[in-house]
Image 1 (cartoon, rainbow, N blue to C red):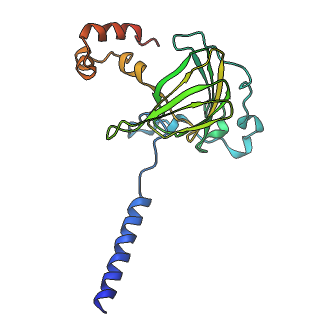
Image 2 (image 1 turned 120 degrees about the vertical axis):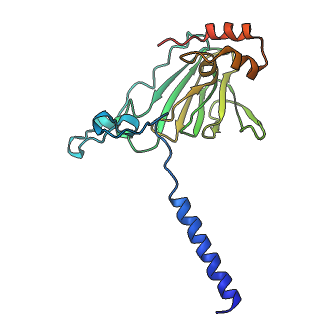
Image 3 (image 1 turned 60 degrees about the vertical axis):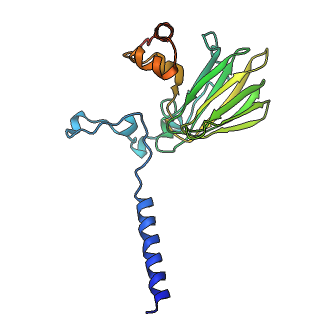
Length: 225
């Protein structure tokens, strides 16, 4: 075999190895944590959902009514998210998709948050929204846009993003997410409202703020079960 032939075989073998490694990648998690146990009696199915016997499935398993109703925005951020995921539609189990309605009071916001398991695509149904997301720490680049009725915007999986009603009237948006259980981490709530609280010294150094300010913020966001 010529040297070119040897090189070709080596390249094919390398590509095959890479392909096999890629195909062996671990699946995306369906919940925040999944601690391994040896005793099956102490275990739950991943995402907490077993599959119903096919013979017992019915149309109601794939149905949800209620997204025509506005959510209550009388809260500190002036927004409400009505989620439609596997908890509301059991038939979504294993299908990797979910939906949400987001209502905004005038100048209300869906504060900076992430979805650890899902990309989000959002369409504005009423009003105008300032939206944006920030890339990872290599750049911390902000992508932002003002959306009007009928406009669509995408928030990549895991990145911090937000929506803010820039109008003096109510706003409504609908979002689809690429997970049956995308999860949500609201940054301020998670950082200042964790249970138990994060040591104020840690946060004071991280945010370059006086410890007293951190303690005041923790009181405002104190975790309530």
